[in-house]
Length: 395
Image (cartoon, rainbow, N blue to C red; front, side, top):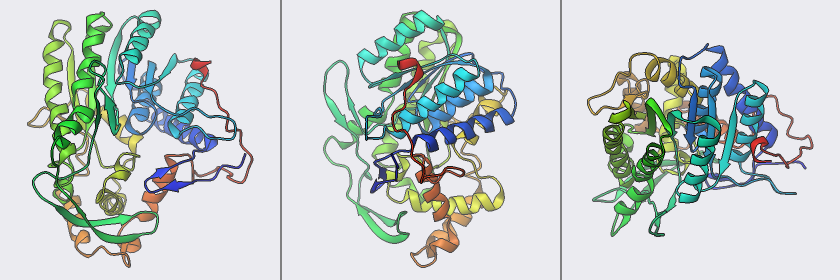
């Protein structure tokens, strides 16, 4: 079939298997071009099919020759219907990993559930014995608690007052004002239940209780802080409360892992175009301006560049460079004073009329469509493509 992008707001309803494969291949090529990383050899990535999770799996496998297990939740392909981008990414990753002689298996299902945890633990026990590194990179708007059955839904709201600022429709380039009402009722608690650290700790408890973590095992979860421009709706909003909980959980997990010399860290990453970030008002406009500035300075990074640097320089490079709250700051280039000062200046004048000049809306849009395998260089989108793709380890 001929597959074209069909969008609804910040979601693309279709995905292109050949484009997704090429995206994965390019990320692999980047990692291998940077040389070997003396990292973990047995890696579990929870939330492994897109964005930072996929980049983590690629960096582990092709940077450190690691055996990887990926847990993801994506829609498989069906006759006449495309699978989700994460499904095609996972199929591509496994194909390239197996071709390189690397162990790679994937489990498709709700990582919050006891069933998927059990399935993952059994696979580790059977195939790998123990895990050296656990990457926690889940991004989900809802969570059903595995023990109580209560379903929580996260919200993106400020705390304590209405938030008003500029935003952009990245499909049209239209800059407008947006107002978001503050959190109320159980909004904060529900968002923390979905996006906080409880599930991360549940995974680590389960792995430790069954002796599936190696001596000195490490686990890393991903977070974001961002600039003052976005803090009212992000870091000081409901999502920020969840991130605070996630970051506090790192210390709890480290205490729990003392008996095996294990450590838990939170890595604060750069603002990038992901399916999750595209849904946050203000963020697309901020990223568009940020991209323009960082590209001009030669310090722009995508997900794979970020994670490769996290691995090679921080996690396995001998210098974690933790901040005052014990976090790894791989957002250091984004948060440079000169970068943020220029973003703040451009923000004041950003409009529908000048955004194409002062921002990188084209780069934002390309990155967005790339997530789903579209607008990838070198792909003939007029060619007939087989939407039915199998994931090798799930046959």
